[in-house]
Image 1: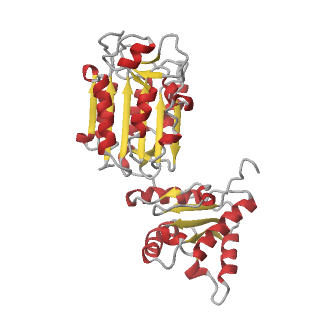
Image 2 (image 1 turned 45 degrees about the horizontal axis):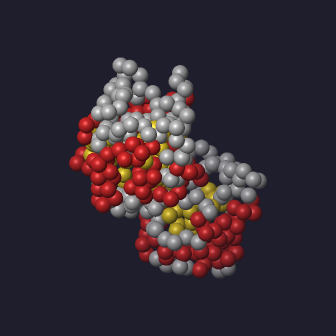
Image 3 (image 1 turned 45 degrees about the vertical axis):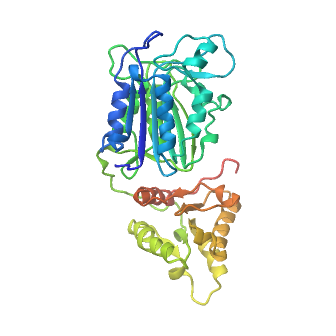
Amino acid sequence: MAVEDAHALVIGISQYLHEPGLHPTQDAEDIAAVLADPACCGYPPAAVHTLLEAAATRDAILAALDALARDTREASTVFIYYSGHGCRARGANDGIYYLVPVDAVGLSHDELERTAISSTVLSARLRAIPAGRLTVVLDCCRAADLAEAELGWAVSPLSRGRGRAVIAASRPTDSAYAMPGQRNSVLTGLLLEGLRGAAPGVAGVIRICDLFTYVQEHVAAGPLDQHPVFKAELEENYPIAQLRGGAPAPLVLPPPPDDAPYDAFLSYCHGDPADRAWVLRTVVPYLEGRGLKLCLEHRDFRLGAPRIKETDRAVAHSRYTIAVFTPAYLGDAFEEFQALLGAYEAIESRTPCLIPLLRKRCDLAMHMRMTEALDVSQDDEVPAALERLAVALRQPPRPRLDA
């Protein structure tokens, strides 16, 4: 797995200039190594920047965050890791949480405001990073304070891109543990295991939600009173590492769960050559090559029959309706009608049976944004996305929670 436009900032502090230290670990060094490992995360080594021990001053950390804002764009991937002290001001009840650089002084509000990095300051720096995928890992005590909405780093204001997530080592009332003699802290040790391939994955990649699930379940199974926290605003459960070995297991689909004549009705813009070529050369061969039965307008609509009636039949006789969203699709009144009919079927049956594929970035109306879409806009991610789609098409539509 190689990610060309990927950037990382890895900060690790155990020995402070003016404050008590922490158990020394190799957390930051190991995180930097796994990010640059082409068999795991595949970040360009030159784009993995580290600030370790004495180098992790307040000015240096803020300058590195400013550099990420300057050097990245919406298509970029950014990973920020921090291991060190985290605290509130002594006796404070103002909702301000601080990351503690190596040169921080004191625990009073005024001292921390001057020498540490408050949640307010960090929030502003993170919001300035335009990357579409931003992952922040905070391995420090009471780290979830930073992810709580009232503290200024609410995840939702950061949602300028397709995925923004924070993994915090502990609840606001918890500690983050590093055991004496161990190379890594509890959280980072499991994070490294997951990134190296131990976390579950599909089609050769591990995704951010799967990574956290692996970490959380293993921390919960341990003897320590530590509770990792995950906060995210996601358009997609984006890939973050390569599954062990990079070789996906052969895809074996279950038998159809019902007697629907078709697994899916596939709706796309027939009048756009690029849309038509992608669907007929990529999507259809992949899905039908795995035994799925698709209803296609050019092949399965009855000649001479009204298109509206044939669309109604296709939607009604298919377990799912797949709509390939592109600007051309949304600009064609009849193609958009097919998606609306699929959405209406989902409302009437009270089951989520419309699956949008977001092939090209486009402005979606509110009723279209209400349905979770599968992002297939990046060609290198299409195989994994189609595998997820194939598995989903053989699952019975789940009743909505309010059904």
